[in-house]
Length: 297
Length: 267
Image (cartoon, rainbow over all chains, first blue to last red):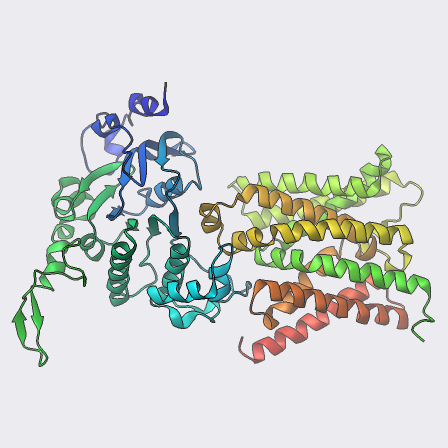
């Protein structure tokens, strides 16, 4: 009996009401489990489950990330987002299910919290060179790409939240990844910094043809940049294009009715643009917030 | 004048300098990983090792290493429980090992067992064969430290990131505990179990304000430790203070000056 069969045959939580995903029905064994591993995906997970003590942190998780797409994992606090990332990265092993990635898939990881202890002296340059076979030029280029070139000789512990994220992304890029996994990249970054950060991630995806898995509890900005959104609350509540997910009943139950309009609000900002003197002008191009049209929204 | 120094002073000097060099990089990692109390517990478990070694009639250095490794295993298990915060658990084990060690040594009371010399060491009683132990054991510890240096620095920075990038945290941690156990066994004769951690931690603390990279901090810590050894031995010879405490006093003075100068510069 394979691990996959195991997961499929598993009894789901008896008390469906205890599941806060909003469905008031017993979960049937999810159909997705019948899907085989997606060979075209950079990483493919089937039937993942994770128990912490007696608590079921995750169950029945299927997930694929392909080259060139940005997949966003959203969910409330305690939904198991970080746990899922740790499983995908191999930091922890799932209680059930399996994860497949092709041998050539290299993963770049940007962790959520990176509070560098001031007791460790470390310049950005030495941090980026640490444990990686890279030249000084490559380090400079990676920092330029993420817009953090001027931090090169600074101490890691003195960086701002936004700078730290950019340095971490540069470190991930130096590992020449196929798949970039970012856990809450916008934590510790202000609102405008957040939009810039997601723009940059979109550009990196285009330039390097990366698959990107983003974790976020934030809705509008990140969803608008995504090709696919997975709404997680212990299990996959719903998934699909951002527009579809934002209208999905379980998504609305988890995030509240105003969340459903969040995407609309975001787009509204871009239904006109301003001329040099500030007068509103209609958009010539379709509303796009990234410099590369035709990608995402 | 220097050539006229007694051989026992030279032996003390070379023993303490050898220890200073081996201890410097390990001390930095202890500071970065906030492991001072773990180190305290391991070093005090070595008293228990001495007592058990006498009873079992085995090589005392070996017995001390085994006791320290056993203590490291107990601490790893303690780290997994969630009822008591780790610092309280360490406070408990640290005092428990010290009390048990002193009790065991008093009960054994064999020939050549001198509690005070185990507690505070006697750097001027170092023999030529002790010196061989320090330099042979020290070279082995240094070689493994160099091999593990980058993984340990990466784990100290961010354990999840290092693990995701392919470092096995358990292997590195176990190897580090082993290094620490050997170092404690070597250092016990010189500074004694109560002051071993000072020898590791204080030079690293003193080196922090003067360092911009991890490697530099390890080098500076080594240099500071050697300076502390010279000043401490001089203090001990010119007064009646025992060698181990004198060295630690010298080290702490350097650390205080370095930290004050560092905060004055706003680092």
